[in-house]
Amino acid sequence: MLTTRTSSRSLPVVLCAVLLVWGGPACADPTNPTNPTADPPPPDVTIIPPDDGGTKKDAWDGDYLVDAPGSGGSGPTSATANNSCEKPFDVQGLRYSCEQKCWYDDYGTQPSPGNPVNGHTDGKYYECKFRTILLTVPAVRTRLVPVFEDPWWVGPGGVDPAVLAQQAVASMSLRVAEIGTTGGSPPDGMQIVGIPAWFWAADPGESTTPGVAGVAPITRSASAGGITVTATARLDRTVWSVGDGATVTCAGANAAGTPWRYGYGGQPSPTCGYTYTRTSAGQPNEAYTVTATAYWVVDWSGGGQSGTLTVQRSRSIPKRVGEVQVIVVPNPGGR
Image 1 (cartoon, one colour):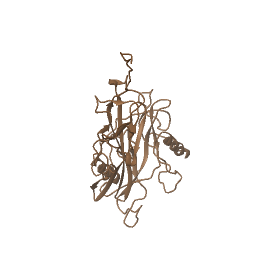
Image 2 (image 1 turned 90 degrees about the horizontal axis):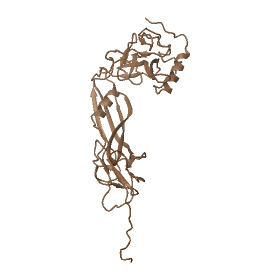
Image 3 (image 1 turned 45 degrees about the horizontal axis):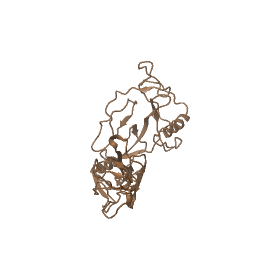
Image 4 (image 1 turned 90 degrees about the vertical axis):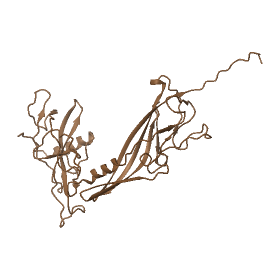
């Protein structure tokens, strides 16, 4: 058993600041009397310092590397359990959640028919106690820190509505549309410098452009343990990296672009386009790499919870860009 220092109540505040700086989860107020984890007990962890070959050290003291042989995570994750992740190490008395990526325990107040919590009269609440954060200065190492977050609810039978939402999204099979662009098809087509290029979704449909281009939003549901979660996705925007360092964002109703048609000539796209100012000469295979990244916003609700997810996918094609040069030839007859 390791002995760690927890005598100072300022430690959680400092560690909360570290979490925010390093992109960790937000911290709740550690002085809030309703939070039963304001001053959590010290963990029993195994730490490998870089220089002593595996001596156990205080997790709060020094910059150490975590010994991570690990074993499968366990606990409330979803109706279709996914324990393929590995907990980095053991923290005494706590379980590890693969979905939450933290060591957790039961929350202090649990719902019951006579004592509803946030509208729930069944299921169970859990709360994260510790997470690891990766520090990179002055050297790469992992630090175990306490966290103060809102608890999460898991329905009867261990069903987490947030996990069902992920399952509903997966069933949508969202993907980036085939790329449509002026200048002909790669690899032989060529866009001309100074003539506006158009970009669009070449195969609009439910899994590519839901909510735009005349396509209805896509809705899917997932159920388990008597809980059903329904999710609805809309294409929010498409960001085009055009290959010369510039990006073009086509958002909202313009997210799918406008297909070019004969008769439009060299006019700019009304919704999604770009004008190149230099050729792709000198690029790999003499072509720019054009990448379309689609972002869908997914709203979900069910099991007494709701939320919003963002899904991102990318697709790339080569695009050659050349220029037209005019050569003036003298009149052989002198006229």
